Length: 503
Image 1 (cartoon, rainbow, N blue to C red):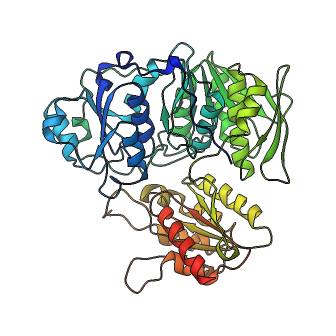
Image 2 (cartoon, rainbow, N blue to C red; image 1 turned 90 degrees about the vertical axis):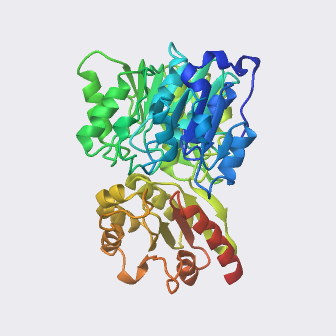
Image 3 (spheres, helix red, strand yellow; image 1 turned 90 degrees about the horizontal axis):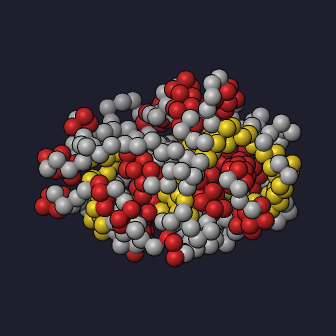
């Protein structure tokens, strides 16, 4: 799928005077992490002096190179003598503690801001009609990337957790901003040992006031939302900050969104616009059908305005997500014809249902799904791609806390494929004093798959690697779906190389 680079207009020139003092000179801990990259790129484009630290294996990686090209200094750590020159230090709350840089900032009374705090400061500059936001327990990456692409008119900036291929995760536009407000940007399992010490000082935290907010889903999602009531409370809080809320109204999509709509109707608040197939929906989907050439043909009605386009997406759920982004753009008053042209060029999200190659007739596809709902839906899309072939799922579960809570449903989701290969759980700590939940996932998977088709990968000199297991079973016409965001991308690359020499 073709992608476009951001359109730069004269009104989008860097404006360091427009930034809060706390963000004019800022250091981001974990700058290459999802969500942090977009924030760093946006601030650098605004004229801020931005530096960041990353793990040794990422300092010279692809993300770090993108940041340096935009003027962001990236190193393994920041010298203590440089800390006092900062307006603030930002961290993602996914940092293992104690942490030298954060301790230095506290010792020198430099404000330490959570990423959400820094994001709120940036969003405050676009209050009054210039802010569009996406929030959800999951499934926000595609929605926010699509919305940024749809609104890219040369005056629009964005801060995304995951970029589209060939498009920066952060960009500055003078007129408006698109932002992904989902807290679920990385594996959040640990915090520095004394988080109360990390005071933001006198830096007040404003509440962003989006003109329009798309809410994609409301579900339990540990460690952010322990249960459905907690998720609903957070969703309602976020929704009530916006002037207009766009909510999917599709039977199979996300049932708790019905509860959210009811809660919002209990008392005066934002205008709620639903998007779905029913005639009662504010934005009605009159057609969303798969085309012979790939993608989906879409038609929407919003008042007397009609939108028609092709949605370049793999899987109905990704098509629905993009259509909901279109609904949000229509609510913002965008021209349907301009939106149709932009949507047809949307390149999806980096690493999300991306076809990497077909060595020996075996298709290798990457998925960055982390929540169990996303995993299940990407596996269903892989089944559609495979046709008469088999689907081999290579899953890297995300986080001990989340995996333990979702073990049974993750195992059930793997039953949508034909074989499952489980990588070690991606966790925040090298040693985590809890029971490894990987066996619970494997046991649940064996309830829907024959035991010999469920494999767990362990490290060790005599253990088979994931790619060796897959290569031993994959055949012409099969689809291998590699799911995960930590070790999984490297496994996918090694698998491509191995399949290329095996067949």
